[in-house]
Length: 226
Image (cartoon, rainbow, N blue to C red):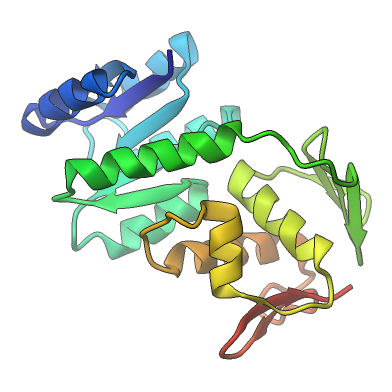
């Protein structure tokens, strides 16, 4: 059974959410602070984490950072409407998606199922290694190296970079990238893509502020130049 760890300090939100996900067939564990969230994840793991950003003990962004150092488990952030900066920081730390409070139960369950479905999809029968310019990817081993140096990369960054490298020299629209990496049923905005591109540039570009490889094509999208 798929196990979801809910990290939410407001019982008025966590109780109905736990009940809903239980009815949907998930195994659910709830913790109400950041310290216990990290401890519970280390002790029992999870297939997906729903993470509130405003938490006692450790903030949601710090929980995200610590969990991401240990695992590529999907993380969906639960954010307040006015927490735009927190959203960006969370995505930069490796969260896969965010849902804004107050959220609809239907939307949240759809997001959860979409993330889990992508996580469990079998790999297509394509080349096990991809290389363009200074970047080399070993798809089977989930290893990325830049100029021969290994670079840590969470799942969504890895999937985005793989698509760009497999289409090196071609412009990929923002819609194409979002559909392939986050799925055609993704209902968020394009800020998630922009944040992941920024994180990739920080890892593969000599000067991320003047990218030579992962370049923006104004009005269209992005392309990878070897």
